[in-house]
Each structure stands twice: as C-alpha cells, then as structure tokens.
Image (cartoon, rainbow, N blue to C red; front, side, top):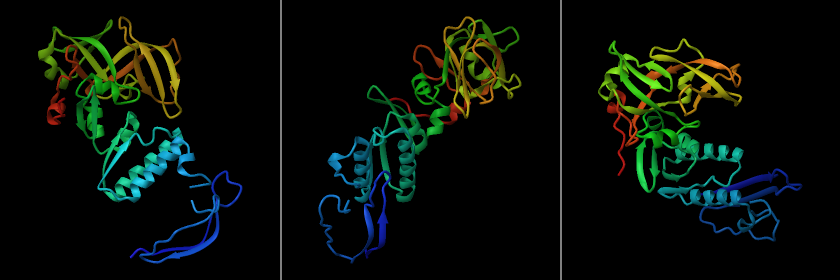
Length: 300
C-alpha cells in the first residue's frame, strides 16, 4: 500500500525570496493517479526552473534521482559527480555511499577521480589503454600495487618511485643505492630480494612512510635529504625533497607542526618494511611474502 499524505508543508530554498510552497495539505490514496496542475512558479516542482534550464551539476543530480526512483537491479554511473563543485561533490559522495548501503544494490561507477574510487568502492578495477590492470579492494590495491602505473595512479600524492641499485654487501646484507646514499634493507626483505642482487630496479615507498624522526619503527632506515619545497595543507604538511646524486624528487607526508623550511637538510626515517621494488623493464612488482599471500589480478 502506497499512501502519500502531506500535512502543512512549507518549503524555502536557499537564496529564494519567496517560499516555494506554503502550508500544503494533500492526501494521495493508494492507486491514485494524481496530477499537479498549475502555471510556472506555482510550487509544483525542482525551484522555478525545468530540467532543461538547470546547470550541468543540477542536471546530473536530476538524473541521479531519476535513476534511483526506478529501483533498477544494477546502477550504471558514468562520472555522475564531475560537474559538481568541490563541496557538493563531497556531499554527494557521502549520499551515494549511504544509498548503496541502504539499497544493497549492484552499482558500477566510472570515474577518473581516485578519491571517489577509494572512498566509495568496495572493489576497484583499474584500467589502462583499454585493459584491466588490477582488480581488488581499495586498500589492498593501495598497499599492494601490481606495477608502477597502479602505484603512481592510486594515491595523492602518489607513491615515490626512484631508480635504485640492489647490492649484496660483504656482511650478507642487502643494500639499495639511492643516488649517493646506501640503505640496508630489513632482514625480512633481504631474503626476498636476494636473488635480484646486482640489478637496477625501481624503489617504491608511499609518502606517509617517510617521517622527519630518525627513530622510526623496526625496519626503518635513515636518509639525508634537502628540502626543496614545503606545502602546508592544514591537517598535514608535504615536503618535497632531493637526495644527492638522484634526479627524482621525494615527497614525504609529515606532521602538520613540521618546522622544515626550503633549503634545510634533514635526516629522514624511511619505513622499509612498507617498500616495494619493481622491475625496470616490465614495471611489474617483485613479489614479497605479502604479495604472494594476496594474489592480485593480472592484466588481461
């Protein structure tokens, strides 16, 4: 039974001088075909304009509403938030998340916005040049990228990717050379990477795994770097750094109270327990124990 009852409804829209509706009382019985008839501006519809006169962002919201009320078995969203301003995009993102939880519906959502993908999706399929590159839960892909494309694409700022040389020193430790600096790998990684000693590889580390403190977690290594730029973001600060002998810059996500200034020389702590190494020729990740235990999908 679908009974609709409106009791003393009054509605004001932001920016509107007059009320859109005033004290409306109406009952629509189950099975009724109720028609709301009246001239433009009488209060029967979405502000004082019809859909064709709405902005691009408003039209997208109308289209979303139309899709929702039809109760489809599968929702197909093609960048539905692209024409919205930043604040409204965040709000609508939350509404779509709640909608999915409430309806338990199947949704396929196309976007180029990684924030939308990370926050909304239960699974992500990353595509490149018409092929699927990697599919999985957002955080699984974030922590275990299958290649340098995924590592650089997912995350803001993206993963640091630096050319390195992997060596086996006289004491049996595995070392990576970044520019003029050499870092000893933790034992857990040394055993995995030992068969690749003597090779030129790509080293990957997320910005949040780099801190100004030299007393890092077990498996951390110290790297001296020069601050090229400081980007305060309020909740956090990004440091853009250079290492002697290395052409690639490093980005570190550090505490918002950082006192670093451009031109400073810092000793950074790198959490090598979270590092990745990629093959330079294929750009694919060299699997560790963790990557073996979580088999990502391969391109097809």
